Image 1 (spheres, rainbow, N blue to C red):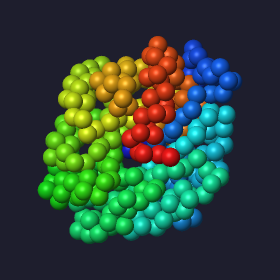
Image 2: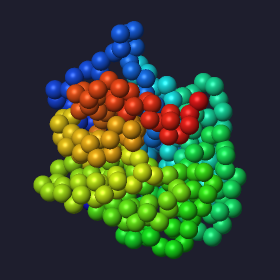
Image 3: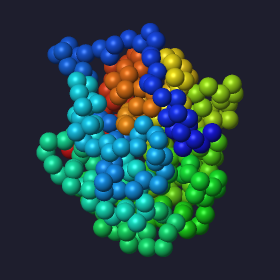
Image 4: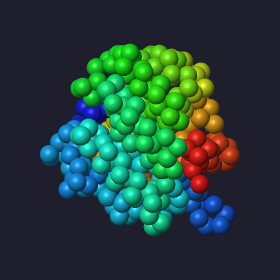
Length: 314
């Protein structure tokens, strides 16, 4: 099932589900929560931007701005955040970039970097990204690949591959946000763009309740063998049933952590999309519960250190 279809179904489901039996996130010895870098922060101001995918009756169909995010993360020690593009009308890509750069320049927010929207297959893409080469705040580009306008195999068209190669030449990354059945396409794209660094979003949208995860597991293993791709642990909570537990998400998360290893995984909040099924705190606590048997060092890498290193955050 497409992620967009999952978002629609989760939105129709209404209330946030309860998490049964999850442990509270453990504070450090100093009494503080462990530090978090959130590598997937969505913000949108509907007075400024048009989001064609956002359905009128969705709980998400309102502005979600920095003050709302700061309320959501209160008390969780989120020390830095990376903005993730929100699939605005492509005509607004430059305006979106300017909007988030302005936020990153402010001293009173955790946002320190951004992945902006772009269309690698379109004519003029090289010119568009040229302004962001070596940019202090802009780290990469994403085009959502699970939308109706991106059919299976779209990311393998010559124009798209060329655009993603240009990202590598400009020192920018590309986020892979796609249907779990198309990770084989991601594998081919990554192999064709050896000088571009990739981030696989949302555990490759691994199917939470599938009876047979073997095709996804196999493709994740193959993709993880390529050294120029890392993976975000995020997003899959929107697949959860209305009443869910951390154990529902654990098979997908544990397989992802296992195949990519402790040095190539990064925590991501996916706020406010995650609120279709969980509060920000519930998602953080669910992941900490799932990862509780891993070493303290590996958890520091997952929640903080890997993101700082990968994005070159100050």
